[in-house]
Amino acid sequence: MNLRTCVIFGGTGCIGTHIAKHLLEHTQVERIYLADIRPLRDEGYVKPLLRWTEQTGGTQPRVMYVECDVRLPLDGVPLPQQADLIVNLAAVHREPGHEPNEYYETNLPGAEHICAYATHAGCLRIVFTSSISPYGSSDAARNEDSLTIPETAYGGSKLVAEKIHAAWQHADPNRRLIVLRPGVVFGPGEHANVARLVRSLERGYFVYMGNRSTRKAGVYVKELCHVVQFAIEHQERTGEPILLWNVSMDPPPTLEEFVNAICSSMKYRQPRWSVPRNLLVGASYPVAGIAQLFGIHTSVNPVRMRKLSQSTFIEPKRLRDAGYCFRYTLEQAMTDWKQDAPEDFDLHGGMNNNSTHKARS
Image (tube, rainbow, N blue to C red; front, side, top):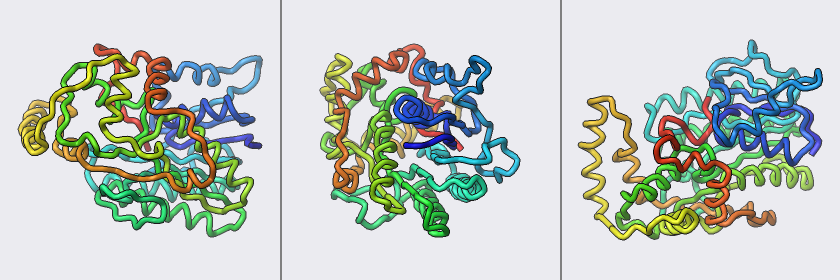
């Protein structure tokens, strides 16, 4: 890939930092701008990336941070005047965690402002990370040809954002758009769904609630980076103006497979107990209410409890048809995660719940 300048919006989050590292290590990109509302986090897995932010030998650093709020027009933001690749990761995404209007008030203007910047910078290629949320939940397998039925404001906002990016591409036949719909993204710096699962298994309080066979579409963050590179190279070969690909392990793992992989790679004890779903969901209401009353942060929430028993059986059909070969099994991903970021498995200091697994706006 001949990429001189790349701008990653939402670039200081988990996915953005990994994509930046991947492009620096596996492509000929000369300079990457990380445009985000917050600077780079001081976490172990980010330290190799921080080296590229330093100026050496009188030359400019290869990685530069630009403070940016995509909810606002980008005219006054010190972004490069020319860009070869834009990666849009910026989003309000955590569910629960925001009011319904907040998803639309960030994700839609963000898409519009980034597409406007792409036009100004003469950029002909955008990679947009959407989500599997537009599909809704279902026990039946679905792929890119399936009907989208968003059940949440987040899923609806992501679907509309896809249309905004598609309109940008349709305005010029030379433009190329890649829309990726990843399942839950896990790995170093994630601090979200799978991190909570790891922590509950490590501490021994995880229990099933009749959901062992519930499928959870998911992808290791480093695998997602390889998919981004593969999609760009595939598009260069085929000339397809728009790619819309689901990104998940194939087939999507069950919750029990997630649990088994974590316990096997981390040497945790297998959970033995199973509690009725209604009992746990019912108990989560007073726990969440008391925590909110006293200002205590807790991951116990009725929405999260219900999501644990909802399948996201989303298949990466087009990725499979394009000939992509996965690099990580579920157990290999967990092992690599612990090797790369052992601090994420520190009971006393790791996996801060206040962080998010996906780039912010």
